[in-house]
Length: 96
Image (spheres, rainbow, N blue to C red):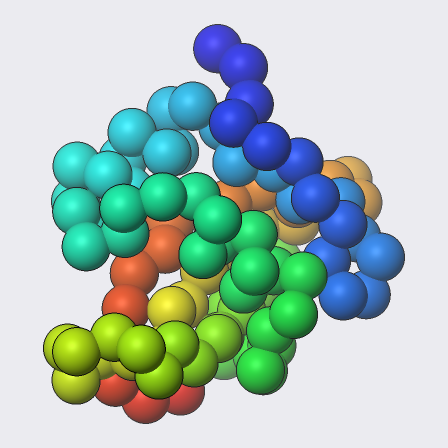
């Protein structure tokens, strides 16, 4: 189906956003209007966490210009065989 973009995160790991996942994000989280905020979150995150055992990492970035109280963009990335792919992204009001 193809990719919207592929970037290297701050730790040098390759991450991609597929067209399918971008459609999911736009449908379920319409407050994310463009993929640039996701790229920024991956390349220059404020924090990266792994709240559960496994292969999923949460990338957080604070966007102070948002008028909504949910100002942290969290982008959830799953890593398989050294490659990362975005599962979803949405805004939250705090870091887990």
